[in-house]
Image (cartoon, rainbow, N blue to C red; front, side, top):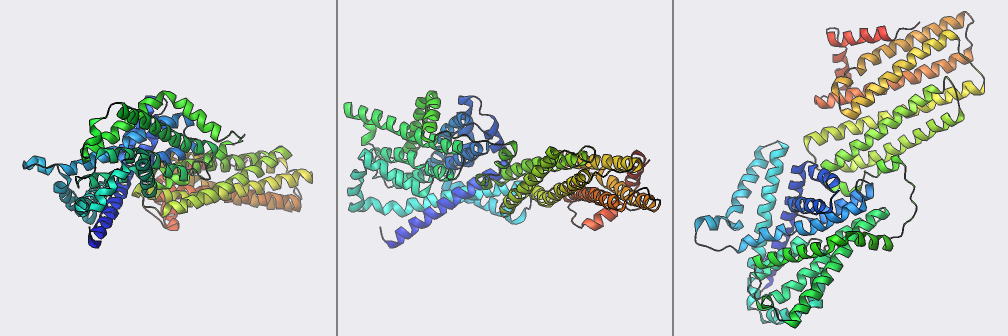
Length: 587
């Protein structure tokens, strides 16, 4: 094997790794976050969890990705640790599908149909079709399918390139002489562990073994311990992912590690013990790609059957390793936990989680304003502190969610997810400003309480009408945002126009009372601050609703959009304004 053969082998490995990554990305995008939903929900039954874990991993072609995702679920509280065990076991089985796909590279026959089953025959066709779709189609779904096709073609081309490059090894005495060394169970297992830990993919490690097996000089006595070592090496991505995570997430990664270590130890003792008592014929056979796929799958299935009944023991062992520590978590903490960096690898699911967090933020902003308005009737320091805490929580949400959305926006997302991202980025700042205005209203209520100020009966009744309108516009806006209800969003702008009118009318009435000496200047300042904050809140509600409507219609000129809504010939808009005007008439 000369320098150029080595260069070709490394190039083939690079293509193999890239193809694997491209295939996994295409499958993940094509799923649109549905696979992650399945992982998060269908895990109540251990056997069902194993099947779901195996199925999802077979779809995305990576047990590491599945396990890292599970660690993220546990870290964010979506999944309990006990539920994660079955998924992790299933992921170990699902990852063997790659070896079965790669084993088809060894198909050799003169028959046309059988030849076409060989990836070297049909992969060029996939590559041509995938390239044409990517060049000429702009639909996300078709482009995702094309990415899957190209990923698979590149993966198999890389596999074929590696196989051809390593064939000269069959004639190298140095390579043939070193192989018996790796038949030592411990040494072979360590080599497999290191190989998988470095490549961070058991599928790629097994693929390399399958390409080497095509030289015809590697036996199962060398392959078997290396496959067992790769079981343990596949735990590295999950262990790295758990760094800095919550305790349960660390335990999920440890369950994966303990499962593979204990399972590998059981197989090693049983298999080599049996081989010592009665030598097994397979140990003297030459390894083939199909044989490696069979052994790989068989070991994984046997380990799962042995350890599935002991899943609670694995959880207990992980819990003993990572001691319990009282972790007080609020609902808001759990919501922010959904913004897990691991989910960024599957952007469609991360977008969905971000939206769920934004809905919680919207509820906090609405609550802060409603509590602040109630303080105008009966001020309490406890209520004032509640408004302050809510405002601080909303600030925290904007900071963490905004940072997460910026990271997410750099990922490749579908057109629908791009619209959702745009909406969230625009809306969370308006939600934060609503909580700021709630804080301002609370300060006004505190000032009136401390100075023992009180509005006239007339002013109180006017404020009641204004408050009712603000309460309703908040409710409509946040409901439309939560449910993505565009019909509700269309009701916001007409009500905002009425609130603008209420603001002007109340100011004019206050000036009249001031001239007649029925109201003090000091109270006037407080009243002006209150109604100005009310009017600003309605403006932010308008921004949120208009953003929902604009993004749905691919419109981005806010002023032009609002002008279009308020045009004189817009009968529907004018009808809503009149209806709201009758509902919120000042006494």
